Length: 309
Image (cartoon, rainbow, N blue to C red; front, side, top):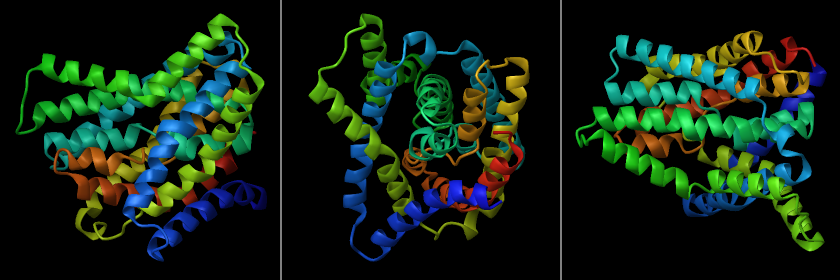
């Protein structure tokens, strides 16, 4: 138990630091957004590029991982969305709730946790998890929420907007850049490689600080029922579904398989309330984010305690 707490405690201490600097007034919301943008547009892309440069392309893509992680995430999305609809949530709210259950914060929390447990292999799982999240789960959730919203548009307009968003995503662009560098076999100049290494190393602590600073507690009481369902789906059902899917699509590298389950077991993406705001469900999404981050202290310790390492 002490060993498990030793792995998770640094994550939550850094998140607590982020919460503290915002509550104390040292950082305001605008400053936090700048930090978040730095992580999203600079540090995480550098981490992804570094992973591709340091490994052959064949080691950066595992079909079994993608199939297992993708199938499990999609199953949780469908079942979770259906349960939310049965519980009385509107269609857009159910789509966003399903997104919260099936889309992990792989960059901000999943990677730091997996890196402490499995080491450099975590960067490989990060790249593949982001493929599933950015090419399957997020576009599907936004398309369903758009279709259910008052500002209903044709599927062509939704598909066009989704494609443009993907093309502008720094994470997708860094994946493409990493694949190009890996295929070319070109080595980065020493100073550039060192700069990328520094930026990549900054991604984990800054990302955790941003998550801590985002925590707001005001909306918890109002949405306790759907929030409880979303939290259970994200922290328990998602990692369990990935573990089961790995039995069907086994991954040869045990460290990579462990990383897949760990990434699935962390809270949802940091921009979850921002996505919810677009459809008038920011309060629900913010409450779900706070609940899952707090509850993950217990569920992640449980997960690390039962998974073989």
